[in-house]
Amino acid sequence: MPPLVLVAVAAVSVSLPLLVWSVVARPDRARQQVVSNLRRGLEPAEPADDGSSAAARALAATARRLTPRSSLARIERLLSRAGRPEHWSSERVVVAKLLLAVLAGALGLLYLGAEPTALSFLLVAVVAVVAYFLPELLLHSRGQERSETIALELADTLDQMTIAVEAGLGFDAAVARAGRNGTGPLAAELVRTVQDIQMGQSRRQAYDSLARRTDVADLRRFIRAVVQADTYGIAIADVLRTQAAEMRIKRRQRAEEKAMQIPVKVIFPLLLCILPVLFVVLLGPAVMDIVAAFS
Image 1 (cartoon, rainbow, N blue to C red):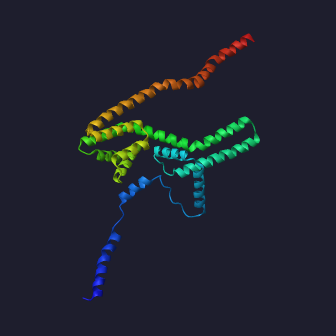
Image 2: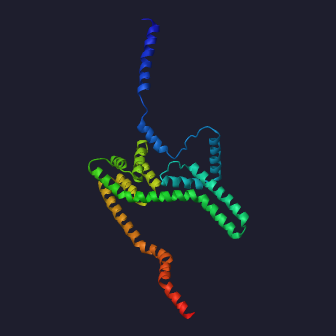
Image 3: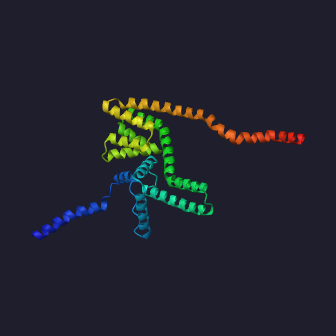
């Protein structure tokens, strides 16, 4: 057989499997989903290459330069605690802070032009400061609600993990199962933790990252107990059972505490809104009769 024919046969035999693989093979969707979840909220989406996107990038760069590094770090912590909401990147938060402050300042200057008094100047300054910190306040509120939801879901999730471990699953498999079966923010954080471990992080680093992201004292205490159990070789089922009972007791104590705070919180609306109206309705006719009698 001539050498050229051998070369052609070898080239066809090599290229044919490559062609079949390129047509049939598909990217690993599970890995793509994991990478997408890990990068969500950390990297801004690539905008279209036009004038408006260039202006937006310039505005974001200017706002980032004008914002101190401590504020940027605080915004990142707030975003992490709030679960990195969709369309809430750090660049957008910084730009929103700047635009709100500028808008409030411009409206304040118009108001000062009409009434240039010291009280008006103080009011404008307060409104501008509140407008500047408004995005951070919204993120803080959302993060606090999310932390409270995680604290409420923790006891039930630990019960599910305890049942899974006692049924023969490992702790990581129990965490993954609780994350798949759940629907709240705690389930999403558990799925994120399992993905971190799958991407190469150690268990301790992944659990520490979970504690930092959620900023929930009960969950941080549970993670510390799990790390100590892993270090000293304690049975994880006993740790889960004890932690679940403790979390349930604390949840009941928090409910009792809120129930005891209700009478104190009701006093001020009662004194300011209900009692004055009641006095007017009951004593008003008597006072009118007394005034008519002595007039």
